[in-house]
Length: 420
Image (tube, rainbow, N blue to C red; front, side, top):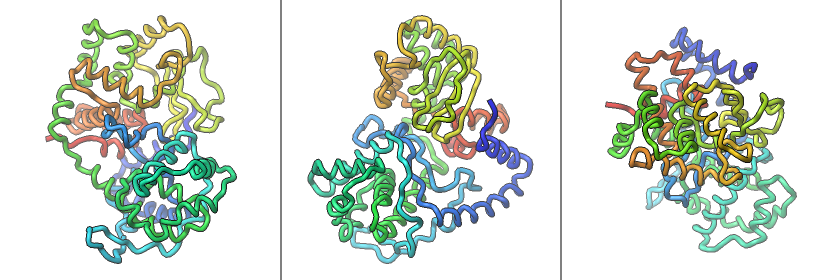
């Protein structure tokens, strides 16, 4: 399968970095300035393009399960420095509670946001707004308000005046409203408000807080250290193939299905659970899948190959499945009776929350301690970075592994914990 333009650009950038790091950094500084100009002419990038990898806030079991949100800071930013234009947040005053009032933007970044949201994103944005509205107003959204908000998110004709009437409190209470919002909530609310005509003043006031949350998020990822629980879990795991195969061969309590799920996360660079949740079994090579709208695409397994047509980065990927994992797949497929989904839930697609719980319970069954899909990605990234640091893997091998994880090289390094 030929590479996409994005794949070619990515591989070219990685090669240039390896050939001459100093020259690459200088070019990146120039590119960063150009990106700033571009940012001024575009609406703020949708915080999360898919809700597949974002857990609902109220699901306590997934407090640590939120996958990497898309940052407005380029993954390739040299030395993980925050661009100057993101740090120039002008403070007007700090109130008695310590809340900072930032100077609003002079000009809105773009006109009305009319981007087409994916169905999952619509659901996520709607549920988030419904929750924060209730928390602040101490009352539920009325039925009509819910209906009109849903139409707004679907780009359907809606009663925009009714929506604005119900959001009129933001004109006086905006800072009180956003005080309690976490990073994701703030980004979702911002994305909703950018779709409402006549809200430019509010957009200009709220934007600095979206930037502030992004800066906090980036800084929290730098030099991340393990706590006691992380150390316990990391030391309990082994991504060495021999150790993984030992568990698969000796643990008689595991079903073929459980062995497959375990193998997907331990015998192949750890991807997001959603990549396998939407994977189908087919009897011929997929054809014209890339021509579909991205939210209508699926991923596939066929003849020892994984086809990833729907990924977080929008890259189309094709990978040969390792022999040990392919054996588990074929063994599992033999006993399947109905349905095309690789991992179905009684012949229906898994709810992502249900699948995540399934993963947690399975790893708890094997290791007597739970692991979420996100934790596995963090620990695997830590393990690979450790191997590279100790010259047991090359940078080229690291880049190839990152690609299989659907990570950039720099993103993967941010995912890894610091080891003593």
